[in-house]
Amino acid sequence: MLSEINFLKSILISNFFRLKFPFKLSYAITYKCNLRCKMCNIWRKIYVPELTIEEIGDFFEKNNRFSWIGITGGEPFLRTDLSQIIDIILNKCNRLCALHFATNGTLTDKIVNLIERINDKNKKIRLLFTISIDGPASLHDDIRGVKGTWEKAMETFLWIKNSYLAEARIGFTLLHFNVGRFKDTFFSIKEVYPDLKFDDITINIFQKSDFYYENQDMEDLNPEEVIVQIKEILMMDNNGFSINNFLRRMYLRLYPEYLETKKSPLKCQALSSTCFLDPYGNLYPCAVYNKSLMNIKLSSPLKLIWNSKRTRLLSNECANNLCPGCWSPCDAYSAILGSLFLLFYKKKYKIYENK
Image 1 (cartoon, rainbow, N blue to C red):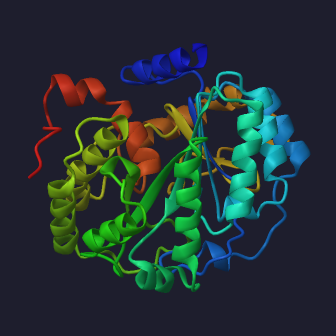
Image 2 (image 1 turned 180 degrees about the horizontal axis):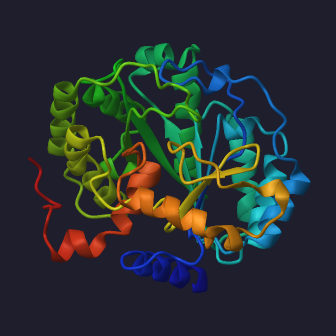
């Protein structure tokens, strides 16, 4: 209960002030990947030794005040010591409220084992998994570059749903290859899982990053096609209110403004309430802005770096759209949560208007 209160308190404060310590950490624990996705070049990265379990333990020993940690990759379940990393996080981060995994869902046995392990140790945190599905089976497998990927991802999704040990969502990324195919994707999943609701869906729209995805040379999405697809999704989205529904709808409704300006439509929270850690220990504002603050191997407490002059300057750059600009859920959702008073009281945007 106390961790949830601290989480809500951090969100509230972030609407008005820069936090003294980030409430959210996005941590790419490995760049290894077992798929060959068309929209991402992470799998092409040359392997470089990643943080050791000792270095990770030292970081979370010194920096344990996160309320929300997002684990991503690469494919995080390729890291052989993942269970040890999660043990460290659970043991050290006593304010942790939510632990989220972004996964392609193909390593079902490893995912199941970790979920059961976490539930044996800690039933209090909110445990979430977003499993990538980018189309009906044949399209998804083509995009992801490996046959059978859709089937394995659905196996994982169904197990989590039926286990009631964690929350599972489908992560649909809107790409050149699947624009206009969301409805087909939704109903292909619903055939296998008839209870599927919009609350089970997270939407992401293709994003470039020169140091994370390394896909900066890929073609931009066609804006007109994106707008048509967003309108179709919003017309289908009539499940009522939930936190996930609210965040997804706001993300989609604000996307046309991003398309027009290529800047975040709300004040970005990067280095105000959130930050990104790569597998090698480099700390960044986010997965798009290629300006490293420090390497955690230097053992400096994050609080000192967080409140340094350089970090504050970079935070101001992000807040004032002087960065490359993005609107991906990992940072857009934090921006939405950090702008609740703007969204509600100024009534700048109509949350429930499905148009």
